[in-house]
Image 1 (cartoon, rainbow, N blue to C red):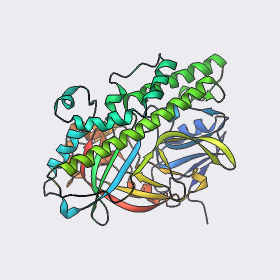
Image 2 (cartoon, rainbow, N blue to C red):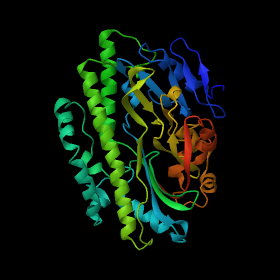
Image 3 (cartoon, rainbow, N blue to C red):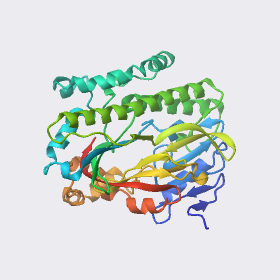
Amino acid sequence: MSPTYLEIETAGRPIKAWVQGVAFDPGTQEQLRQTALLPFIHHHLAAMPDCHVGKGSTVGSVIPTQGAIIPAAVGVDIGCGMVAVRTSLKATDLPDHLGPVRDLFEQVVPVGQGDWATGPFAKMGLQRFRHRGEQRWKQLASDYQWLCEAYPAIEPPRIAPVSQVGTLGGGNHFVELCLDESDRVWIMLHSGSRGIGNRIGTWFIEAARQEIARQGLQVPNRDLAFLSEGTGLFGDYVRAVDWAQRYAYNNREVMLGNLVQALQESHLLPPFQLDMEVVNCHHNYIAQESHYGESVWVTRKGAIRAREGDYGIIPGSMGARSFIVRGKGNPESFHSCSHGAGRIMSRGEAKRRFTVTDHQQATAGIECRKDEGVIDETPGAYKDIQAVMAAQQDLVEIVHTLRQVVCVKG
C-alpha cells in the first residue's frame, strides 16, 4: 500500500506531510524546511493536514528532537487544547430559541480579557462558579511559587493566574453546544494557559535567543533558537511548561464543570447527566516519548496525540463539523493527528475578504456572534474540515461527528 503522506526531501531531515487534497502553500513548506535543517531533529518532521505558517514554527507540525527543545515551536499558548463531554440530553430537549443558553454560557465563562476578580464577573453574584477554579488552583500554587522565585524576571500577567482559572480567553478560543450524529447533546470548548502561559513562553523564547547568541550558534531563523538538554535553562523550561500544561488542562475542566453546573441549575433544560468520560487533550505542548526505538522530546504545535486507542477532538470552524476521534497509533506521524481545520488565510486577510453578510450566511442556524468582531474566525478563513479528515484516515478514525448549535467566541 502506498503511503498516504507526501515525503519531501530537504537539506536536513525529510518531511512527511499528510496533505493530500488540502492546501499546502509554499510558505508553509519553506518554514518546515527551515526546521528540518536543525541538527537535533530526530528521524523526520511530520506535518498534519491542517498545517499553515505560524509564529516560530509551522502550526500543525510535529517536531521530534533529541538534546534540545525550541521554545518558539511550543509557542506562548502553552497547553492550549480541547475538552468535550456528551450529556444524556437529546436535540428535542433543547428550547426552540437558544439565545438564553448562549447568554448563560457567557455569564459563567469570562471571555476575552475577562476574569473572575475584576469587571462585571466580580459583581454578578456568580462567585460559586469562581470557587471551582480556586480549588483547582491549590493543586498548582506550589509550583507557581517556584516559578516566581526562580524567575522573578518573568513579568507577571496583569491578572493573577488564580483569577483566570475557568476563563476562556480570546482569538480562536470558544465554547460550543453541539449535536452528534444521533442528536445527542455535547458540550465542547477550546482554551489554554491564559496570560501566565504567554509570559512563560515569551520569556523562555527570548532566553533561547540570547543563549545561542552567547554561544555563537546559528539557526535558520531567530524563532528556531533552542535550549540544550543538560543546562539549567532547559530543565527549568521543561518544568515551567509542564506546569503551564497542567494549568491549561485544569482551566478547561473548570470551565466545563461550571457550564454543566449552570445548565443543570437553570430552567432552560430538563435534568440531565454526563454519560461518558470527559475527553481533554492538549495541542500545543511538549512530551517525552519513545519513537523509532529512541527517547525523544516531541513538540506538537497544533497537533494532538493519537496513539492507538487515544481519544481526541478535532474541531472545525464556526459553522463546520467537529469530530471526536480515536487514534490509530501511526508511527510515521509520531502518533499524532491534526488539531483542527487550519487557517488558509491570515486574520487580516479574512477581515478584508469577508463581510458580515458572508459570515451570517456561513453560520446560519447557529446561535453565535454575527458581527465584525468575529469575521477573522468565519468558516471561509479555514480549510475544509472534511478534506482535512480525509487526508488523515490512516491517523485516526471518526467516532462521533458534531455540529454546533451554540457557539461562544472569545
